[in-house]
Length: 93
Image 1 (cartoon, rainbow, N blue to C red):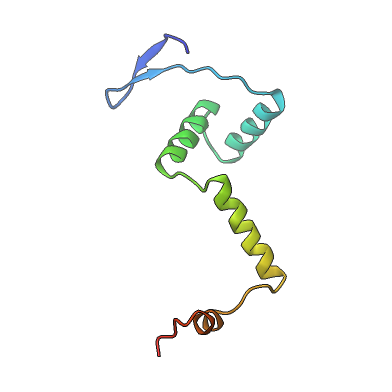
Image 2 (image 1 turned 90 degrees about the vertical axis):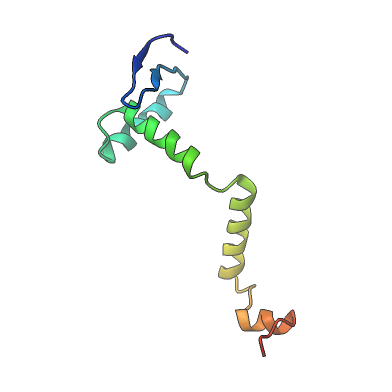
């Protein structure tokens, strides 16, 4: 991490952070930020990291479970809500 800092608008110091990436990944990042209308790579990366912290996404196990459920739906291995209520005895009647 660099020691170069500049004052932020909200009083927090802005610190320069360096990280390593492959050229192909950097090309993907550049294509993405330019395609989404960001003013710079740094702006896009700050936005993406802030979004990841404020709105964490599914973890790997949750994504795998969702994919499995989607596969079951496509293969007709699921049941309707009414069938599930009847099978598990949770009818509201």
